[in-house]
Amino acid sequence: MTERRAQAEETHAPALHMIDIIRRKRDGARMTQAEIEFLIRGSARGIFPPEQIAAWLMAAMLRGLTRDETYALTVAMRDSGEKFHPARLGRIAVDKHSTGGVGDKTSFLVAPIVAACGLAVPMISGRALGHTGGTLDKLESIPGFRTALSLPEFDRVLESCGCSIISQTPNIVPADRVLYALRDRTATIESPGLICASILSKKLAAGLNALVLDVKTGSGAFMRRQEDAEYLAALLVATAEACGTRTVALLTDMGEPLGRMAGNWIELIEAMQLLRGERPEGSGQLRELSLTLAGWMIHLGGKADTPQDGLAKAESVLEDGTAERIFLRMVEAQGGDASVFQQMHTFHRPGARRIIEAWESGYVSRMDTTQLGWAVQRLGAGRVRASESIDPHAGIEFHAHRGDFVEKGQPLATLFATRPGLFPEPEDLVRNAIRLAPTQPKPVDLVSRVWTKTNAEARLRDGLR
Ligand code: URA
Image (cartoon, rainbow, N blue to C red; front, top):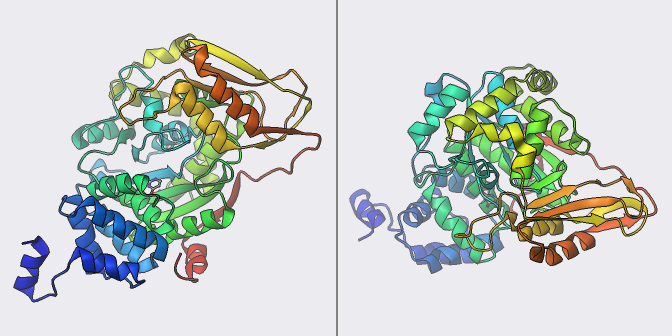
């Protein structure tokens, strides 16, 4: 007898059956909160067979989820496992989440900057997904760095450093682990309601007071079309706010890689240069976006009256070296060898490198960033199978960005891999992804829109997606 049936007999509530729930969603009915709780509890506990969960996911993908269903799903998933309680740290807890991109290393800057301003940043991050890189894989290129901390260890690092970046523990949001693995194999990723519940359940289980979302749009984003990204941003903000967490979403450009480096260790080199107050050419957008995200976090965390004041505070702790010291302390607290940052360029030892030169003179008019992301992954920075190890030194350094003029023969990008045999496919991908043209492309705003509770509510009034 299922738990729900036993409960139903005691309380005289109607018994629920997974087959009825699938049929009702298939036929376009709205799920009740009780049905969603039943579905999520049974999925997290391994009661339902994968084919039933997958059938419901496909029905939800095709029929869409209402705002109420999305909210109920988010809460049920958040509550499916253990939670982190940052209140005992005595600091307001804030975090940021990016929907994924290429060269996006803002976490390494934002976490120590915001911690330096007196807030706690309990960051539970992910691994590479599709063509996008993963924060955990990048951090694990530091010798000894541990991302799989227990919650008491997470607590201790947060107490001593103010920030910590870890992987999801086996007990945090177990329902997402089950649903996500099935979605990945059944073409049910691209549903705004399912994405929203998946992202927010993990963030809200970390007990955050405030959250800043970086929703990417453009050629390297999962949601490439501006209107889809806007809908997702609005849904995320409205749902997180309904759960009691102050939230904003910034719609940001992923029409080119963020910064100069895309890979694992080489992304840490770029982040460390900025933490040291350097301003390397090609890293300007990375610096600007990191400070903007941090500014919003500092504002929502109550340490600045406006996001602009927050940005000024963020800039000051970046420039005076406080953020760098906190980052290095966090590396050591999580078992990493921080001394590698003293010789970070010589620590970077790829087995082979290849320079791709401009094949004609012209402006860099387009960068297909999904293809560039795949090139980075195929150089060895990502995995084909979950069990594979990755190459910490693989990746691409971009010498030109969208809008730059390059002369024929000028280096466009340098590829890094363990051996030259790995270059042909990524080299083709890079050559096909970059377009050179006689006219300069129109500039694109790095942050095109900010979604808050008010405009998110207005955007969502048109119902189902
Ligand atoms: N990231 C997540 O955690 N979940 C999704 O569904 C998509 C991106």
